[in-house]
Structure formats: C-alpha cells, structure tokens
Image (cartoon, rainbow, N blue to C red; front, side):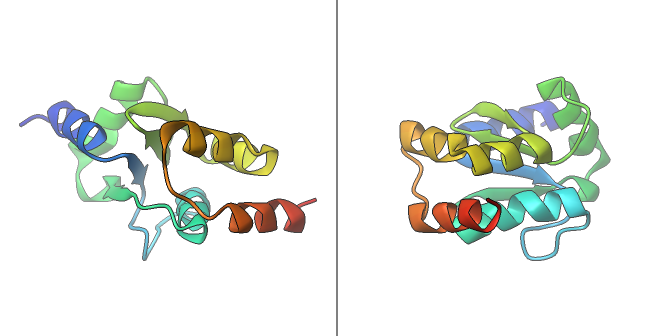
Length: 119
C-alpha cells in the first residue's frame, strides 16, 4: 500500500483525521499542539497520524492536499486546513458549524469558553 493509499483509507474510514507532527498525547511542534489541543478540549473523537513516523506519509499528505504544511485537519473526507485556519474557525464559530453540519460530536460549551477567553 502506498502512502497515498494509506492516507485515502484513513480519511475515508475516520470522521476526523489530524495529520500532525507527533501524537495527540505528545505533539512535536507548536502548530500541531494547538490543533490537537482544540480537538482534545472540545472532546472530538479523531485519528491522529504522526507524520514524523513515516517520511512517505509526511510528503504524501502534502501532495494529497496540495497544502505545504503540517498539521492538516480532515473532517468527513474534507480538507479543512492547518493551524491558522483551524484557529480562525474555532474563534469565529465556523468550526462549530462544520462539526454540526457533518454530524461530529463536540462540546459546544467548551467551544464557547475558547471564544470567551480569546475575546
């Protein structure tokens, strides 16, 4: 199985996938840590893929999405974005809407707490 085949399989078989440097328990960069932190705080169930563990996946996800940076968040097969986009969407409420539209469970009150803390 090629890296692209693995990426497609992960995205198709998991509602939420985060390609990141490190793991949800031990992120290896600040940007990955921020996105994983948002998902963890909101209680979102997601698959974390450590791109540092496989150079082919690390390059493959960039080719797959045509997006040059890690982390990358996918929801129901759709590429959402990286750290800056996820941060902006969290603060604007767009991430809540995306999760609601796609049927992803998350803690709305915690999303409101993030926005209140950053107002």
